[in-house]
Length: 274
Image (cartoon, rainbow, N blue to C red; front, side, top):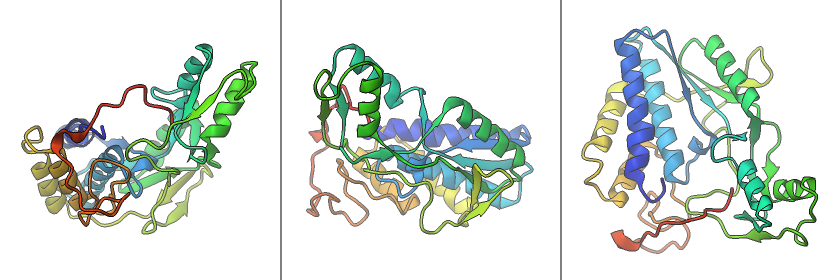
């Protein structure tokens, strides 16, 4: 997604918009949007597309024109799900290593698949529309420590039988994720595991116009132009350690003017785990 923002926009933003608009057309009672902790102060394309999708869902919920109740859930990584570090680490250990971690201090929030499913269903049940439900993910876990524990549980000694390689942060990757930004406040619910974030106000007409413009001719725009347009909607999106400038036209990592050519991106294979 970081290298091909047009595809991320088409699926995450365009797909969400299509489903939400169809829900209005056919009078769906409730629409539950599953967001991500990467949508909070996004630093990469994936997080920014999730944030833009959140904004669209909130704008619909606040328009008061429709009977469909729009609800957003936001949580972190789900253990054992597609793309999770656990099956990746398991495969690397079975091959005899190395286990790859992008940074020794990187942390992530985790919950199990049954926990995530149950909380999403309960949030959908309790939601009345225009809420962001934030799940209590417990304490963040160091990915390096998780790798060591999985090696030990497999009967090996870390860095003796199975090596752990530190490969450096991937493009747009954060050291830690957040479930809430500074402009949001948390309110309790009857379930200690589910909190409600105070949402910001969004004008539907403005947001809809911005998103339609963003998606228009998405395949014909350069990835730099797409990121620039994304930053106008998700104003808290600041690209880090990536191909793209941040909101003021400077590279976040170096502070230099961004003059990278369109062909400068390279496809990254065998991406290490978060």
